[in-house]
Length: 90
Image (cartoon, rainbow, N blue to C red; front, side, top):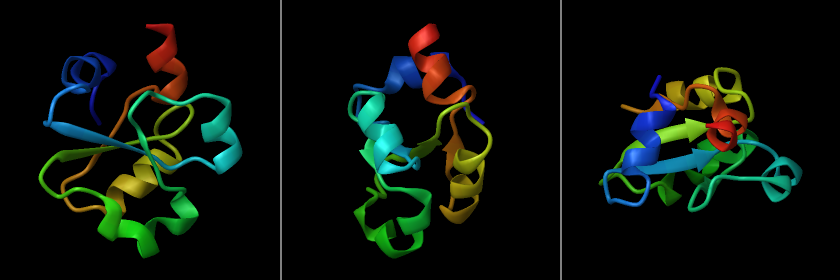
């Protein structure tokens, strides 16, 4: 798990890539700027779209559900504590 503070301080650098694993509807309603959208249901087929040169951080709505599941599928990945909701509250 990675904290909101860590993500915010590294988001606009080449250090991390956020992968939003929510549905299209959820992503379209609100998402973290620059997040790559790959729904969890498509992740296995679209792994080649995720840059390997950066730390991968998965994100969902509240953090810990789908994002934790997605992080388990991506070697070395972490998931964002509190998810998208916490990102916009802090």
